[in-house]
Length: 64
Image (cartoon, rainbow, N blue to C red; front, top):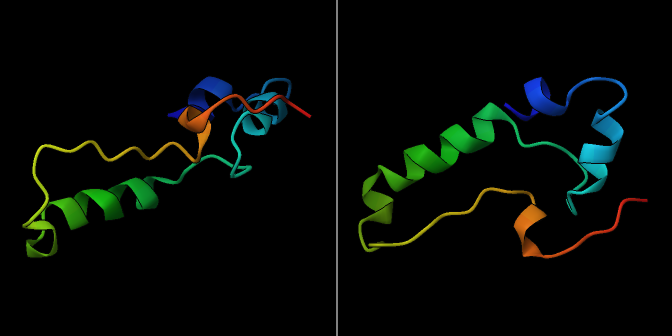
């Protein structure tokens, strides 16, 4: 989704610079989290949010 919104050559470097991890997440990374949350290995986890934002929501990161 990020690639569609921010993937143009003019916007992509700026959008990536806002993420401390330095890149967009991949669909597989999101899918792996969903699979884990749906598995028995997450059976003790209740009522939580799992934020997959590459550090974007952790705080301000001025563009370089």
